[in-house]
Length: 263
Image 1 (spheres, rainbow, N blue to C red):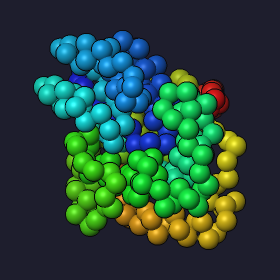
Image 2 (image 1 turned 120 degrees about the horizontal axis):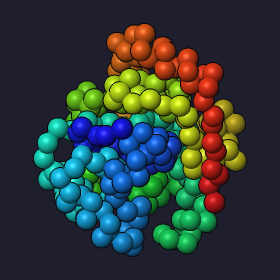
Image 3 (image 1 turned 135 degrees about the horizontal axis):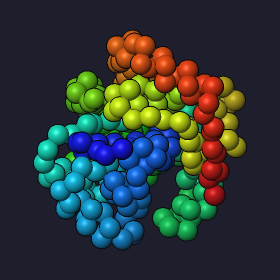
Image 4 (image 1 turned 90 degrees about the horizontal axis):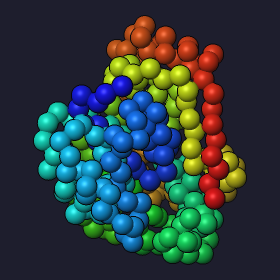
């Protein structure tokens, strides 16, 4: 299927972004994906070459860094479909912590992160910043200092940005999210991939509740933004009507789920 507009997917860390990109790649082809590098040391020449093309692209990356490359992406003209996924903030934080402390990829390409979960809640490292969803969706790739705590203005900007997006998915409702997205963009979706999945870390109901309370305290704006996103999400599901139901039914009966473990 050919793209008829740019898709800007603002991939907040640990919100199923790898799965979503693979889904869009399946729909539009690998040549349509224009991904920002995953870390500061990566080669950006491929991104810059693709971003200069006139043809519609799927532009994707983490909006919390590489601001100079986001500036290049935002210079693109033409129609734009903006989207993001949100996730329960507690599980997102836990997933992020265990990825950064256990991933061989992180150790090989970024730097080692050998701290306890409780220590991470006091850390000023980017990946453990407070309210990362709020900050990311407030900035959308524009430069900001992520070491500064989020505030009510950040929340309101993120709230307005979410309202203006053409689609906001919810990780906890992945099948429904993918069905709504397919209905909005008009592509068929015979398979639902699940990439970069890590099943070997405790979720919030398995974690020390004292830690959970600290995560909540640190991410209060993210919790509010997530609840707002849920309202928009279920409204879009209702507006999708029978088309979304049909796609959802086909996923339930016919899809295969591929899991590629984190390394």
